[in-house]
Amino acid sequence: MQIKLIADNYRELAFTDQLPDALTHYLIPGATSVAASGSFGIVLFQQVQHHGIYIRLQHFLLNHGCTLTLQEDEPVLKLRFHLNNHIQYHIEGLGNLIFYEQGYNLLYIPFCNTRLHFQQAGAYFSVDIHYPVQTLLQQLPPLVLMNDFEKKVQHQQPAMLAPVNQVASRSLLTHVYE
Image (tube, rainbow, N blue to C red; front, side, top):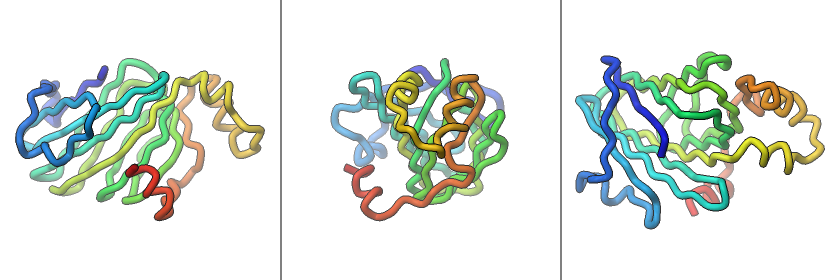
């Protein structure tokens, strides 16, 4: 997993694959798992990869509100499902976004830094399905809704498929959990 997480004090958090017992019931069999901790709480990232597509599960178990910066090595095209509590993001080029519980959207993020703002203590959980950019360009259905999104991706500009995050139906959430 090629990610970095930076805490409020601008200190990079050290990830470890030696997970504390408190995370045992969050683990997905077969996933690569790493965790980091600090005064804010514990962060668990898990990843499963298959045919160039990978699924990343992100758990933030926080003792208090905080701001973290997530850095990735390369641009990412992802279908994001935010499943527990709401979270505020600042994504360069897209501005401030709020993902409410059960919200989802297709995002293209060409920049490395994403600021995550957690309002309060609690458990936050999201699932991101990361796709290679060429998947979008090769498999794109001829939908008018996708035209602006596709153009932004081709020009390496930040993009959201829908200007407002959608709310997942119960059947869609069932598929995500499976």
